Image (cartoon, rainbow, N blue to C red):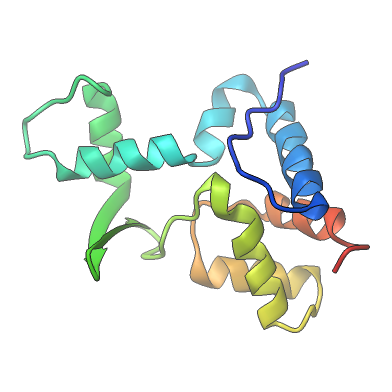
Length: 146
């Protein structure tokens, strides 16, 4: 059994339950899909670096294939001095693993706790790279808390 790979600073019990459920879900995926299913903070930072490199330049931090993948799938926008990563195909900001709990919680509150389908739709409207299954795990783990 794989150990949890959570590098998130958790604040409350609901958040701990959520990230435990997400880690179980991720560990249940085929090994080659685990890293491709979500984007963690370190990968996010590497994508930003890859997008910041001049065309044809390489970095020792990651492979040329990674840089190609980053350029093909993402774009960087600077908003008030902060680099925001956007998915090219959906034109939405990328939600990283460490932000899942708070992003889904905010979307759930914005729709007045209206349920699973509306929460999933709200998340999908505003963010990319966040799985429907992860939103469902949020609702299941916080069902008695919220």
